[in-house]
Amino acid sequence: MIRKIIQIDEDRCNGCGLCADACQEGAIEMVNNKARLTREDYCDGLGNCLPVCPADAITFVEKEAEAYDAGQPFPSDAGCPGSRIRQFERTSDKQVAAGLNIPVQPESMLRQWPVQIKLAPVNAPYFDNADLLVAADCTAYAYADFHNRFIRNRITLIGCPKLDDVDYTEKLTEIISRNNIKSLTIVRMEVPCCGGLQYAAENALKSSGKFIPWQVVTLSTDGNIID
Image (cartoon, rainbow, N blue to C red; front, side, top):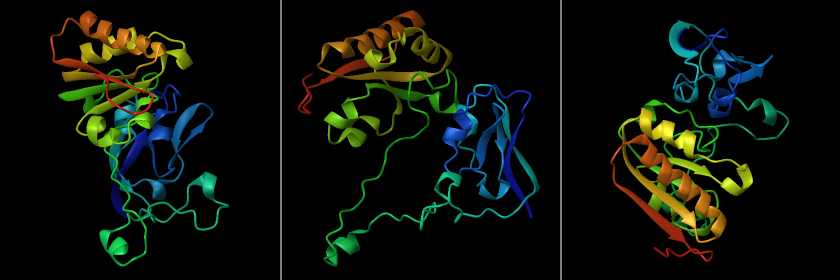
């Protein structure tokens, strides 16, 4: 059948592996340090891999290909009984009402992948006209309603300067400079090591030469907003 799938230019591919991580279907594998579409029938044609590729090595094509198989297991899960993608449905209110005592699964507000500052591309379509969230790793664990309060309607980047042992300033400056960012929200913990993340984000905004609304939200270790 003729359908839309992705095509990878191996000459352009730099072997970063971001597309393989972004592919939720397990259709892309790294072979000899190059990304390769190893199973066309796993490719759903939605292109989650396109925006994360820093080398513009991925495009859409329409070609003769096997029908998309939504029930295939991930390669790493092949030996796990019942481990098949797209078969986990969100629990409904009716199940709770019927007395099954199964809570409704909250909906994720995450809008893009990857989220780690070190892995994120400096330019991607999802950055266009975006409200940017730069958050410390621990904040999502400390604040119970993090998705609704902070991630909703924002593009999310996370990091920990203590664990990564890196200054994010240069990377964040490029992201803000090269994209139409509407606003910046920095969410950090009250602990001193989070000061490095705030410092990097604030200095990136200054270095970009742009004047956009920005705010810093600090969380306590017991999960409350301090300021």
